[in-house]
Length: 100
Image 1 (cartoon, rainbow, N blue to C red):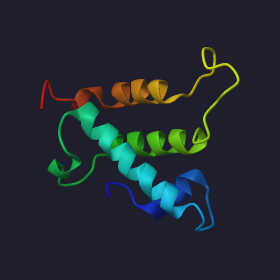
Image 2: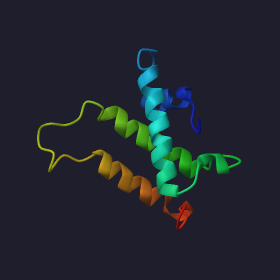
Image 3: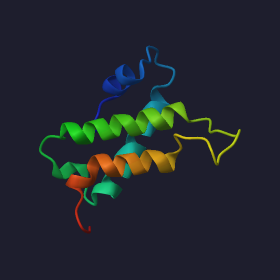
């Protein structure tokens, strides 16, 4: 994993182990999203850049916080997955390849 469960739990301020399975799943999902944006696997890095690590933490945090969805007014609700991906594209834009 590009970020560890312990790092993400610290970032999320989660103390217990009850959410470990969910958080681990979100880490893998965030990595897949990141790779899709970058258009190459994270395994190509010798060391994961701080910028990529921050994008991963940002993505996991947003998915974790919005895991139950929002049902009030989806048109005006901010912080959804589309917004998260758009912010990740801005963060990772300089590292993105033209194609796979």
